[in-house]
Image (cartoon, rainbow, N blue to C red; front, side, top):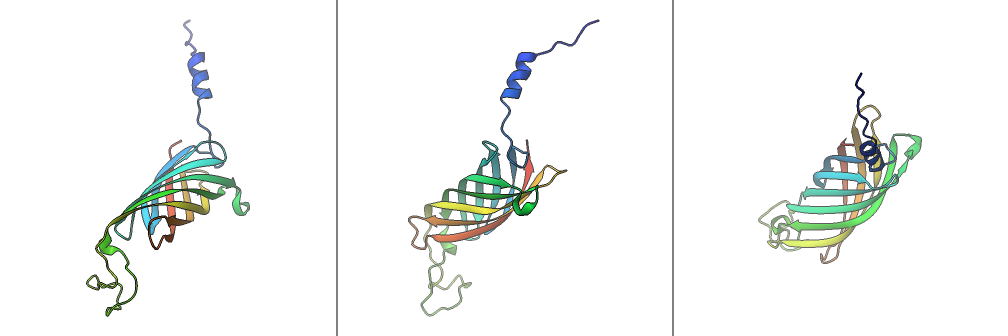
Length: 177
C-alpha cells in the first residue's frame, strides 16, 4: 500500500510564516467607505493589537485623497466581544479642483451654492499634505467574513489656510484572511 508523502518542511514553513490575526480574528480586509470622503479601504493587521489602513477616496470638494494610518485596536468595546475600539494617527495627501473650493463669506453674493458667485467659488486647484487621526468602532460579524465600522477622522493640512477639517465615515469590509 502506498502512503501519501508528508511535506513537513513546507507545512512548517507555511505555519511559521502565517500572518498575525487582529483581535477580531482576521488579518486583511478590503472594502468601501462612505462619508465626506468616500472610497476604497484596505486594512492589514501587523500584530494582534495594531493594523495599517490605507484609504483612497474622492471628496465632495472634487478632490482625491490618500490616507494612511497606524491603527490601535482594543477588543470588547462596550462589553460586546465582536466590537472593537479603533484609534490611530497617520498622514493624508489631498489633491483638489478649485472650482468647488470654498473661498469664504463676503461680496455681493450670499448664496454659497451658486457657482457664479465669486465670493464663494474660487478657480485655484491645490495639493495639500497633513496629519490625520482616527477614532471609532468596528464590528466583526461572527458568521460572515464582513466588518462594519464607523469613525471620525480629524485632519490638519499644513499649507492650507483653513487647515482644520473633520471627516466621518461608515465602512464595510470583506475579510480576505
